[in-house]
Amino acid sequence: MDKWKDSVAIVTGGASGIGRALAKAIASRGGDVYLADINLVAAKAVATEIGERATAVQLDVRDGEAFKKCVAAVVKQHGRLDYLFNNAGMGIAGEVFELPAQAWERIIDLNIRGTVNGVAAAYPVMVQQGGGHIVNTASLAGLGPAPLLTPYSMTKHAIVGLSASLRIEAAEFSVRVSVLCPASVETPMLDAEPPADLAGMPWKPNVRRFLTELAGPPYSVEKFAEEALRGVEKNLATIVAPGRARLVWYLGRLSPGLVEKASLGAVAAERKTKA
Image (tube, rainbow, N blue to C red; front, side):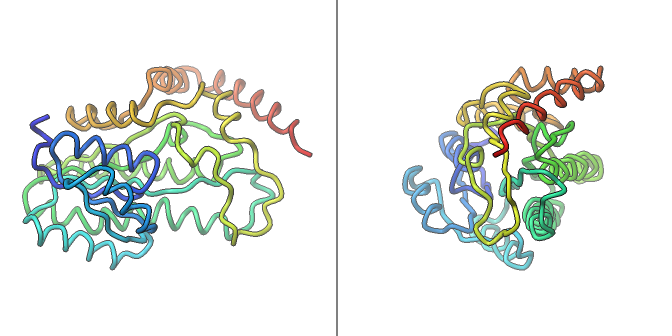
């Protein structure tokens, strides 16, 4: 708890889902949290719900200069930035041969470039101040295959690689780096439709059903946030939750062929639901 008391944190994608739960958990521990989200109205609603420890700020993480200004404003207010939770992201599901180029561009821009922009904005500040912790949200899909979610899995593998490499590079400067790799979590993303401006996506699998088949039912977002913060407190490199997700991860490392076989069955079952 002492690690969070009077700490200063930015949580991107803080208006909903994992970001909202992380922000609430940090504030409940006595930290000051900035909910950075492209949806300012929703972020303000969450900040009001949390109370005086929370501040809503509008941020499109795809805008590197805007991200730097956000970090600079927080540092100017508090004199430091203790935590950056690079959490904003999106999912794209479907058959790769049916996905339009715009879908790939959108998810790369948000999930990868958005995280890189956060690192570029916060890491130099943390190096200069002599410490800090960057926490990037990836996924269990970033630690193994996630068919029918291939673009999403690709971006989350990139976040895992970024985090693992930066963690070693940053250690000399007392800057910590962790990556969150949850299995499916009970958030609006599970049932979200593709953005309305992305055309040419004729079939989308039922993500909730498919992920349940692959790795079990969705995990409570509040429980995940608590487990995530405990992992951050321990400075774990890779925080995988819940326990069954760790089992899938270990199994994938020990017997990738078994995981591939199970995934083939889940893909075949989901494809049968096509109209």
